[in-house]
Amino acid sequence: MNTKRLTEQDIDEAAAILREGGLVGIPTETVYGLGANGLNEEAVAHIFEAKGRPQDNPLILHIPSADHLERYCKEIPLTAYQLAEAYWPGPLTMILKRKPIVPDVVTAGLDTVGMRCPSHPVCHAILEAADVPVAAPSGNTSGRPSPTTAAHMWEDMDGKIDAIVDGGPCSVGVESTIIDLTETPARLLRPGGITLEQLEAVLGEVAVDPAVTRLMGAGEKPKAPGMKYRHYAPKAPVTVVTGDPKKSAEYIAAHAAPGDGIICFDEFAPLFGSHYVEQLGPAGDKGEQARHIFDALRFFDHTPVTSIWAQCPDASGIGLAISNRLNKAAGFHIIEV
Ligand code: TXA
Ligand code: MG
Image (cartoon, rainbow, N blue to C red):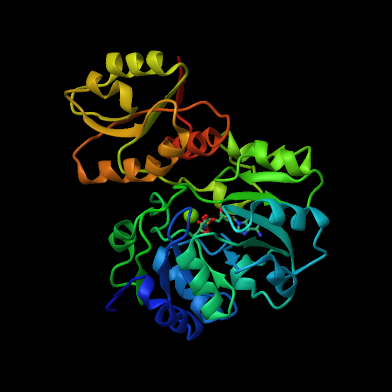
């Protein structure tokens, strides 16, 4: 298949491909998504094929506004509208009870569905023009880091999908926060662009799913099926070092072998002259770190490194999402200094 290169000038063409059952790489503020008409079972099945995604991992639906929730969801709690009022359009996905109109292939047979209303203007325009809910997982091959530029999407999807729309680099850089509103208290299933503190400001108490902060045991089932898979992983094994930034940098400098890969805060790059280095951003700027995390993880696949060491921010704010992605990339191989 010849994958078309589209831009923000080609909204109508992207929307037409989606409506007609094709697959389109679409920019969002979090990561690029691999979109298909969420009401077309065959199109949705092609998403799973293109990504090599396990069939038991459900997809989320993208809509242009909260007004569309009732088309696909039932028993919608007031909290959904309160969250939408505060954080939509934006990097937040809500798990709600689904209506029968949502095909089983989207939800992997669950009686719930993830709903998201993205803020990226190009994505929003495509959703409006397509006039169908767009099922879209992150646009990476299953298991790889999520794509945060159109170039990343080309790397994984060239020749496998109909088109990719280049909407520039993603401004958040990690996937949306997933909050399950079918439980009381609401449960955070995946940390992302909307922070736990922001959720608590609207909801009060929020439960944090154990899969956010630790490896699931063999018999355990996380509530977001996707959280059980090894994910975001570069080909070389990753060791995460947490704690005071200066101490973690010194620990890595003392333990890394020459030629190892290093993910570090900008201030500490001079310590790693004989290594492959990816700078995450300043130690004090988590927004910048979130924008770079997936690009940093992808970078090492183009190098001969056999081992990667990563500094990691603390868990406040969007630090929870960054540390979750790093810890998952490391299979929760974490050293505290
Ligand atoms: O930012 C994002 O959310 C991006 C962009 C493209 O919108 N999308 C994304 O989709 O990250 P995906 O498929 O890569 O991750 C969705 C996660 C998976 O872990 C999946 O298991 C979980 O959401 N999920 C989907 N539907 C669910 C449901 N009904 N209940 C629990 N978890 C669900
Ligand atoms: Mg994904």
